[in-house]
Structures are given as C-alpha cells and as structure tokens.
Length: 354
Ligand SMILES: [Cu+2]
Image (cartoon, rainbow, N blue to C red; front, side, top):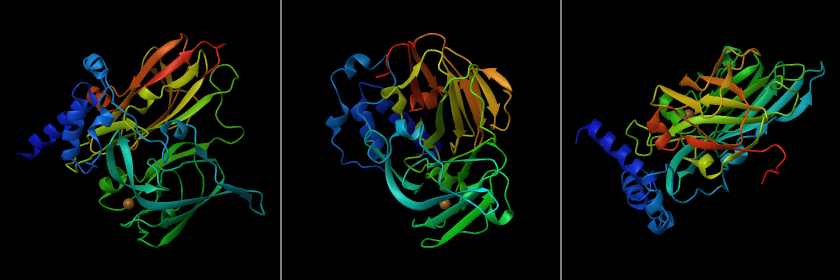
C-alpha cells in the first residue's frame, strides 16, 4: 500500500472511532493501527444511546482519566515558581523541570508514548513578570537527549539549542524575563519536529510590569485560561490522528467551560501542532480582540477566526452577550472532527455556577 493511502486510511478509521455508532469498531481499528493499548475492553466505549447520536454529534464515547492530567484544571494552572529577591531587589523565580517518558491518554482508550516536562503534555505553564530573574533547574530523566528552548530575549548560551542535556544530566537556564507577552518553550533537540511532537512543550507567560495586563472593558475579575492547540501522530506515519486543545480530544465538549454572561475572558492561545503547518481558533456567537504574541496592550484585530502557524500564539479577549452554549474549534473541519472542539456554557450572571 502506498504511504499516502495508508495515511488516509488511518485518519479515516480514527474519525469513525469518534463519530458515533461505529465508535467501538472504529476505535479498535485505530488502536490496531497505532502504538496504543489494544487490550482495553471494547464495551467501555459503546453505549446504546450512541445509535441516536451517531449522525448528529461529534465526539467520543467514554472519558479519559484525569488523575494524572486534568485539562480543566490545566486551563488556570499557572506556575509562578519559588520566589525570592536578589540583594538588589530583583524578583527571582526558580522552577524545577524534569524531562520524563510518560504514557498519556489522549482520547478514551487511546494512549500515546509521550516525552514530557514534569509528566504532563503540555508541560507546566511558567508565568512571571517582565524583569524577573528566571532560573530553571532542568533534569533529563528521559530516554533521549533534550533541552529547553525558551522564546523571548536571552543570551545565546541560555537558548537551549547547543547545550544538549543527555539522559541523566542536568542544566540550569538563567535569564531576565523579556519582553512581556505570550511565549512558549520547547525541546530543541533533533529531529526537532519529533521532539516537540512527542510532548516537550509548554506555555511561557511574561506579564507586563506595574499590575499586568488590563481587564477587558469594565474593571472586573477576568477569567484567564491557557489553550495549547496540539496534535498526536499515534501511528508515527507523519500525520496527526488526534487533535485537541490541551491534549485530550473533545475534553471541553464533555467538560464544558462555564462562563458568566458578560464575564471578561482572556485566552492564552498557543499553537504547537506539528506536521500540519497551520491551526486555527474559531469562536461561535461572539468575536474576540486579538493581541498578537501578547506583546501589545492594544488589540490589532477583532475577529472570530484566527490562523496560527507552528509556534505562533496570541492573546484573545471576549465576553458573551447572550446565555447559551457556544462551540469553539479549529476551522479546519477535519481537526475539529478529530478532537479539536469544545464548548463554552454561558449562564446568566445571577445564577450560581455549578
Ligand atoms: Cu527532546
């Protein structure tokens, strides 16, 4: 079979797995064709109600365990590090990052042999303020040589490119955080796309000095969340079979993100999808303001669909004017159908959030 035919087949068989009535069969077909656990019982993923849903809904049957990684918690899980001060008064933030090989679950019953920072994909969201002194204690307990390459301004020997950290070794990255914005970090060992795609990436937020970014419109608490758009090549054919924000396919469809009416929302949107050159974020029922790379406090666009190349990231701000359920998803329909889809559940301001 030609390579291209194989790719089409594997993508289609997984899509069947997510699309309803053929769920169990499709999922197993995908499992047989990929580096996943084939011993998971089929019955876990089938349900009588799926016969009715088969042609009307995207999604998965069953759920992914959240004991090791909970995408809902990850949205707002910011790591500010261990804080101290230098004699001169500069804030110092220290982080410990360990590269380790961990098998992760990316859709019900579909496991991926990941390389991780601190055991999760994405790694921790590292957050600081412009001008802070950052110290990252990096240890590689994985099976391959890795590094941490931070986006942003820093000396060449802190760039995580030439100082390869071999299994069992460690390295300390030190630099002053600049400029403020939405950045990312990832492994820079070769082959680069494999090291990134295996899961070695995370979000790096540098807040502006003097109180951070302004609230949206009125001065109210803003709901912030990190969304990392990623994909997984489960059978190593150079194509992604599963897409998501924050790793777990359809997680925010099954566990909808609750918002209040008119509540200001800020999404830190990062694209680390490998193999596909672009990804996108489309919002239903509203438009959002876009702060390109987060390096400005003035929006440069007002839209409902934005396209990001690999490594690109933007801050989005919006609030909903009407209650209801609103989809957000990649506007590449295939990505949405293979897992990159979620829902905001907007409730009336006065009602309690469950
Ligand atoms: Cu690596």
